[in-house]
Amino acid sequence: MLDLSDFRKGLKVLIDDQPYVIVDFQHVKPGKGNQFTRTKLKNMLTGSNLERTFKSGEKFGVPDVANKEMTFLYKEGPAYHFMDKTSYEQVAINADDLGDAPLYLTENLEATVLFFNGRAIGAEVPKSVTLKIVETDPGLKGNTVSGGSKPAKLETGAVVQVPLHLNQGDAIRVDTRTGKYIERA
Image (cartoon, rainbow, N blue to C red):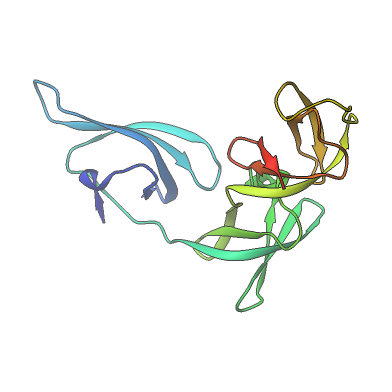
């Protein structure tokens, strides 16, 4: 069991039999009355946000959540298939449960798959990935690394702003948290 004093950002708690992750919290000690904690929580199953206030002394369960390093294999319809590297067990995760991850998934990419009660509920991609540009305006002679930018469509369908000197077929590194260009690979 978890207590309010255990709260920290990123902690996973069980509220009303649903797994939540703490996005933000604030302990409040008013001049009169008991202390309480304001929290912002994100449901790990639905992705919905919840703001809730808890009184001092409340207890919370620990959700049965596990992370597993897996390899992305392929996409089939709305499902993305991952494989455990040790047991070769495969799981399929619906695109709706992945958030922005499909924009960066390429074959054989290592990802962290999140399980709740033995069921795959989401995946996290690495902080940066290397992707190939499949469509962009041609770079012109004299364009340098500094200066303007142009949109480029990547092999996964993601569109990022890249420097003017990059061309179709170039490989670039992209920050998956912000969706921004980092460097040429």
